[in-house]
Length: 202
Image (cartoon, rainbow, N blue to C red; front, side):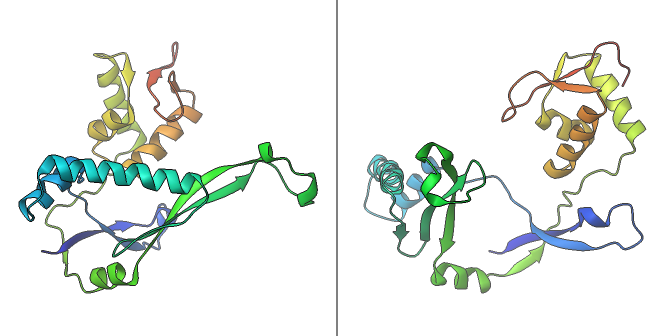
């Protein structure tokens, strides 16, 4: 077994004569609780349902202890911890009410054991080349014309498939189209759905 990777051009080098690249892991799907339960069941005397129940309870307990301000350490995996942010600039701690502090993120720090196991993992360049197609704005426009001639809405996933681009490139192009007034998000910021702006030609 080995981790497969591919080289991607750095975004800040696009449009310049200095091309720079970085390595990125090529992912092949994801593993969920159902699959983990099935695999642990096959390699132990535990039933799949019992394993799944324990994994779900583990998730609940992690949330419970994080919600009470504790760090959660899982042996062989790592430590989870809640990070906070202030909604506004804090000049003196005594003047800040609890409402001005909000959840920011959950950070994860892998154990030394887990990090070392990845350091020793074999790496191979992927046979799949999951790069974005280098399309001009005109070529993207033509694809959008074709898409909206058949459908009224467009999601980011559809844009990726339509233009053959990875997520980050698709997001940059969608942002450009929105800022240019060609597309408009009619859903939420977290789950955007775009429509063609009326009286505009793409």
